[in-house]
Amino acid sequence: MRGPHLPRVTWSRTAAALRTVRARRIAVQTVMAGCVLALLPSAWMHAAAADRLRTTADAPASQVAVVFGAGLLGSRPTPYLADRLDAAAELYRTGKVKVVLVTGDNSRTDYDEPNAMRAYLTRKGVPDTQIVSDYAGFDTWDSCVRAKKVFGVERAVLVTQGFHIRRAVALCQAAGLDSYGVGVADVHDATWYYGETREVFAAGKAALDAAFKPAPRFLGPKEQGVSRALAALAD
Image 1: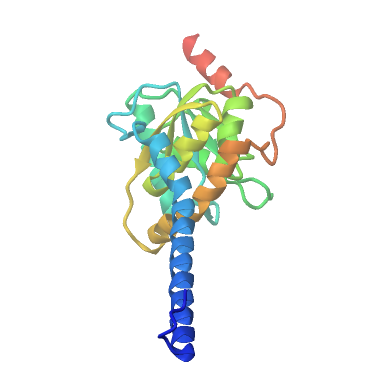
Image 2: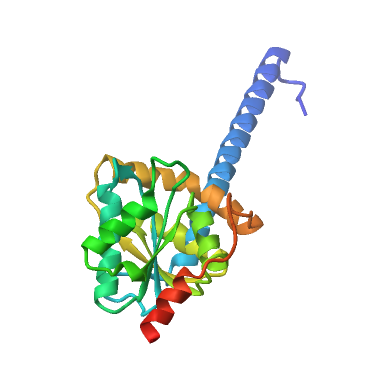
């Protein structure tokens, strides 16, 4: 309440100052609340993958490794994708996995990630019969859902870059695929920093995918590639 001893002009200025302080406080609180909400998806990813990150040396034995696509240079894997494939080849050589499921983009006839990944793995000593291709792994969620529903994978070691591995594990877990992740270390170049930054924004979509479980862009019929590859080893 305005006291009688305060001049009208002084009181008006005081009231205006109080309104300004209140507005600033509300603005700061709004920004802080927005930051907290923006970071929640990243916190969820870290929590979901916290005890499921491994190296190629201590990854649990599993029948299948899932390798996510990471682009091509012409018809060959990018250095980042090559690093993922090298890790998968090591898992196979050491007996940690028996089948490698390569999942990537083949939405155009002139762009075929899975076949480029297959060719690279065979050059690294992985038998062609033990490589299965998913040609509709258009994003991480699609790859996880298709691994489970189309290829019948129940448990897998996921192989991707360190900046992507938590999202991959969290999404595959949400898709019902029991998974552990091997995050491949890379040089901290411009691509790495781009990947790290991209993950902050991708976390929001990942949280929505996990919550609402949308159908993949292309699901298609079940495929027996993984089961046939495993059965061949048992014969």
